[in-house]
Every structure is written in C-alpha cells, then in structure tokens.
Image 1: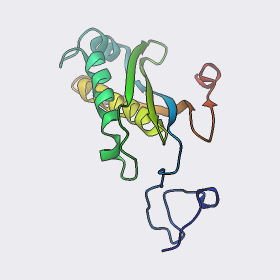
Image 2: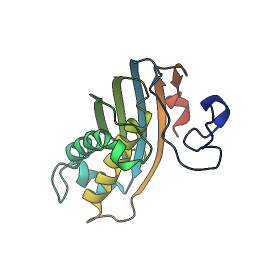
Image 3: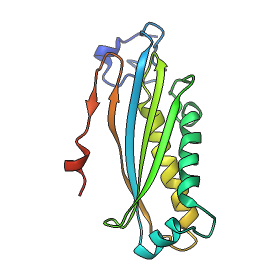
Image 4: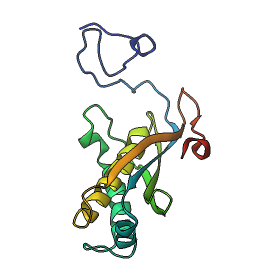
Length: 170
C-alpha cells in the first residue's frame, strides 16, 4: 500500500489508489482545540410557535440541545473515519428566529487532543436540527433544514478559521 503525505494528498482520507484510510494523528501535538458550527430549520410561524411553546412531544428546544450534545459524543460511530476523542466538551444552543421563521442551532465543541473537533460541532448541529424536525413533523412536514456549516475553529497546525456570520446570514 502506498503512503501519501497529508500535504500532498488533497483528500486526506483516501490513499493514492482511492481507498479510505484513517488519518494518522499519532505524531501530532496535543493542544487545546475548539470548533463552532451552525444551522437552521425553516418552518411556518405557527409551527415555530408550537415548538417554542411546547410541541406535541414536549420541550423541543431542550430535547434538541440534548440530542446535539449526545450526537457529538458519538461522532466517531456515525462518521466512519472520525477519531474517537476523549473528554469532548459540547454546548448546543437553539434559538428562535422569527425572520426565518424557524430555529437556529449553534454548537461549540472543545477538546485537548491531537485532532480537531469540527466534525463533533457539525454533528451536534445536524442531529439537533433532525430532532427539531422529528418533534415538529406531526404539525408540519414541510420544514426545511439547511445552512449547516463550520463557523470557526482553532488549535493545531492549520491555525484559526472564522466565518463572519453577520455578513453571511440573510
């Protein structure tokens, strides 16, 4: 099997013959790393009112926040080539946005490790949004999930990455 250096690989999870491979992070320094991600779910104003006010299955906002945290902890089980990260700290916040109308989800993940936590933050947002859909589908199956993206990260060789979320929304 040929061994590509990460710098030359482009797609670091494929070897030179296109086979999947787990990136070797054993030589990387353990550093403090964090990542933030966001996404949204659009719905009717009436559905938003139901979900924020206690929908057919209970407090959708709190359940979605908890689901996002749980999902981040299981990212390595859901995404085949993600590393298991120890002691990841995750926070998920769901906020109403009447301008959508809908809900916005933001997640932050932190770890002391040799690889980043971008996938954990993105997984937290994705599963929180799916949970909101699940909890609201009894009243509105037309909800639309979207705008899921990494909004920032720091730690490791690649340095700091931040998106200007104020100018990107709208």
